[in-house]
Length: 365
Ligand code: NAI
Image 1: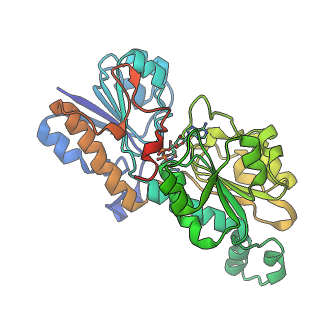
Image 2: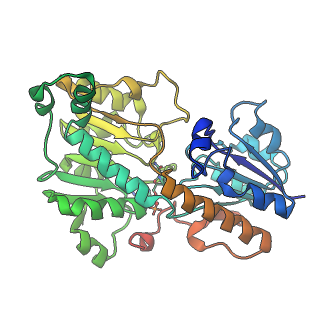
Image 3: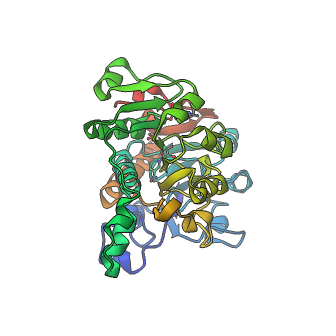
């Protein structure tokens, strides 16, 4: 009997209140009935840490694993060694860095994700985070709900986005969509830093200029948004040194992966005022501990400087429909022997199917 193991986040009462919360253990991506009809053994759990977890118990004989970046079941080399039956690991969402891809390759496990399923959801979140930091929104909002009224205290750290230099570190599906959304804000300049150029027409459409040197890129931007996958080349990329290349008072937004930034270096830069703010929804380890330094960091001179939320930008209700459907399609393809959509495949037959997640031709698609 085919065994499918799904590691999802718990919805609790929220899943009851909102049946569209498909990404929860309760609503199981909407595929529980389908799995039952097909006669699969379908195990759904949020219990993912430690040797006694349901994840570690069931991974030993699961053929298909479903995980999600929002509550990542970390499929380490160790677990891959134990997963004797595992053939397919599907990421319900985008970003499979919680899986040891090298180890998956060695065992010829296919890793696939629902490419594109939540890229608009994230791009919108990036825009929101840039604006709330630049405009010092949180300080104003806190006043509004606490009964306070001190316009100067908010305004002294509030700016317009118009006239600023904004750059995306990576201009793939999300990065490009951020550039598209930034265009009407009349920024001084839109920049991007990526392995390769955007196609000329895509570059022209958003009026963005590529900067090939990272130092040159970071030092020109008032706002940097990070939209690269996490891999060996981006792990800890934004550290103390790279932050020192950024302008004093710049804002940094990261909705890609927490571990692309060195957490303590970012928090120190915000607390000291070198960065006017940092925001995003991704954390180095998820769920994040309650005492993580990104929870308590605070901007300079009474600025909020903190645009952090739990990892939810790519799991809006709209996105959940798309990644739930995409997950089912990937599993059906596997079961019927149909080839996967090439863009969905991360590793297959012992090799990477994507250039470190970054094939330029996909950018404007
Ligand atoms: P994509 O594959 O379309 O684009 C990735 C881009 O990054 C490519 O253009 C690639 O060339 C570039 N890149 C890779 N390494 C780089 C480096 N070292 N320096 C500069 N550029 C580099 O991926 P997409 O769909 O835009 O997603 C990007 C990442 O966003 C995902 O891998 C995931 O980690 C994250 N993400 C976060 C979500 C959230 O809910 N916060 C949801 C979806 C994705």
